[in-house]
Image (tube, rainbow, N blue to C red):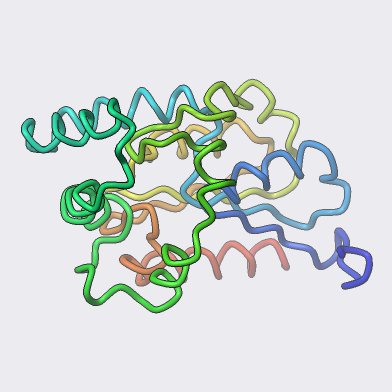
Length: 210
């Protein structure tokens, strides 16, 4: 695909958001000789670190009764119960995934949730939306970030379940990094904090092009 599109180190910016950021890190570690720049958006370099931060965040911010009910549904493997999403949408998604009322979610976000494939997602992520327990539970590339030498932008947001301080740290571990912070954003900061997200992303690309 890259070759068919005639993409290489003079014109190829690789952008990865969330799990795409994980894939972007893996691609850069294997093929950065073909990259002009790398953008890792709302993704940390360690799933164990993500789990630890998310656990701390939910215990500190979520109604204990709501958290207990969510965990009970997960423990009994009944996350297909409509009650699970009824709890997650106001207490998780609207606070940490996209800070827009559910009824007003942009069509692309609605489409993602509508067409999500649980046969792929659940084995990878695990059944819980409050942390990862699937096949990627132990994925950790933090010690390898120093091998990434291409210009790299990491993007973090204040309300994400991904620790913004870890994403800032990532920008100091790669050889040529920059950090973009979205103070009003969550996991989909491109939607709920576009005033910071897009100017910062565009500025990075323009600077590298120079």
